[in-house]
Image (cartoon, rainbow, N blue to C red):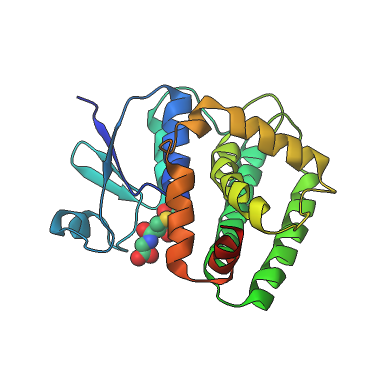
Length: 221
Ligand SMILES: N[C@@H](CCC(=O)N[C@@H](CS)C(=O)NCC(=O)O)C(=O)O
């Protein structure tokens, strides 16, 4: 039985980071889904913020995705962080940048207000233009897949849905980012971080938010 358990929900991009890292490291783990609308007592005990992911190493919990990634770096084989301290610190900063992108995407998925969504898409355009000058290809930092890639695999997945509904053109002037997105889409660890019915689940989630994106889904149906 694997010693590591990743407490999850099916759609969470922060859970996916950890799942991608574990797969890249070749470490077997168990995935245990939890119902966040009705958190069981055992989950409340191990998750002080009530959030997933939580990684259980045996019975010891670690909450928050970034400490989980760092713990896996320190305890498991096949490092994904660079060995150079300066570069490693820079990767940590880009991971934080990726988290702000996820926060912007959350607004895009859920806001009822068209104007708010369009403003967020403009902010996202600026962020991807900024990262265009950093991304080396095929992965963020060149030939070696890194933790920054584990963060952006789940980020780009949202655009598979958004692209169908809005002609945002965010990647039109960012060829390196566009190629990076395609490379991540084909990486087995990224593909397998979610179940095959992820697109259906995401669409259902967006519909349930009853936001602007949900109204576009309805029109497209
Ligand atoms: N900063 C956290 C964010 C995790 C997070 O927001 N998880 C969401 C699911 S994707 C969650 O559990 N939300 C429940 C809630 O906010 O009540 C991390 O990096 O792990």
